[in-house]
Length: 280
Image (cartoon, rainbow, N blue to C red):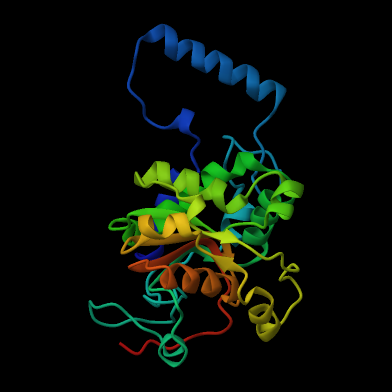
């Protein structure tokens, strides 16, 4: 058993638990019995299914054993700036990778629940493209635990915005849905109005790194009425996935230009292109 990874797994198991199954104050036998009866009726009508593959599971909002084993959780050691896993660590200080030193990102620190693999992709696509809003709460709770260190002194959450036309077609912003759950867990306000996508862009899927950067250049801005509120604030930008970082960097730069004091990043999954090397 990996002594570093097991606490993350325990936290993720707890994070997957739906609110009704968490410990709650007892208000009498009758209410508890009624809840159990109602839960039983729901399970008969709609048997709990794995969030990713829809296989049968014991509780709603959970992963089956197969999907669980294939979700590559990011646990120490990882780069303190990029949030990418490292093959080894040393000492008690924060580790900064070679990649972060050679090409530092616009954001301060990034955190992610897992590497972007098959299971993480299926969860993100189900939420984003299949209207699976039921999986936003367990995903958001996992993110709140993975990003506990950057959330501890943050002052507000800002979800990556959708252009109004895409929002109209999709009907919801998956990043805002995740941010709402994270805000509830961490006791932080969500400020969706502090960042807007002022130019429609083509989907980033299929574009290389340079094309992604060109696609989002100048696409994000902070509304004038929000600049006074966010000035000097410590923010956490929330999104579902971090790939090349082009969208994230464009958002972070817009927030920093508007006066934000610091911007960290929290995503459900992130791409780790290659094995990195810790420098310190």
